[in-house]
Image 1 (cartoon, rainbow, N blue to C red):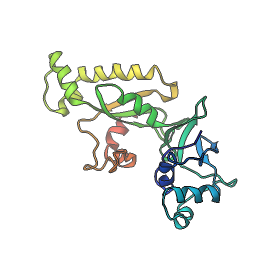
Image 2: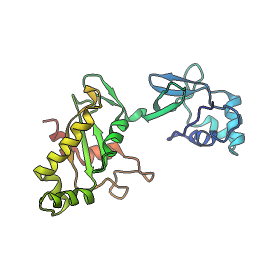
Image 3: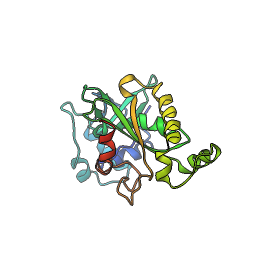
Image 4: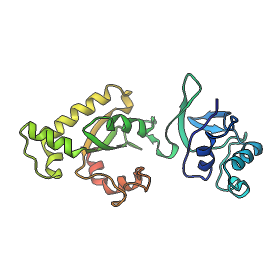
Length: 229
């Protein structure tokens, strides 16, 4: 069974994304270090990976790579092994939320549960250095507008919809449903509905559509601070 996945932010991601094509278990050996999956580092492994991926390994292998003292590659990811020994990546280490109470929370799994709701388009979970978790939620406005019309709620612009008490109550019920499946310290205590989606053009998403959390925190700082007052 090969240990294969794709990481980001280092040129080694090229090797991981190619690893599934290798006949041998190139990245089979790995350790979990404080939740971070660390595949074993050996010259033979990386040499083989570079050759089979058709890359010039010498320069790439030695640049921008961080290793543990016992020779395992630091991926910068957070993950876990399941009962079958398969790795599931849950988030990036740099994205981990540490609450004021010292609880570590990977935001992406919580966000994924939120956006599984058909009425939610995007979600960003907040709580680093705070005493509870909150979220910025972008509704799927086509569905929300349709639902509003069915309930006789006036449908103006998005700004009006996200502030309407009945719409806020509707989303509160959906967040409450999500919270039932979360640990208490992961539960979303407050949320704010946003009238516009995150996008690359407005600076909240990368070209690969990943959230730029720092940019979101800065842009919506007033809304975030209001949830902690």
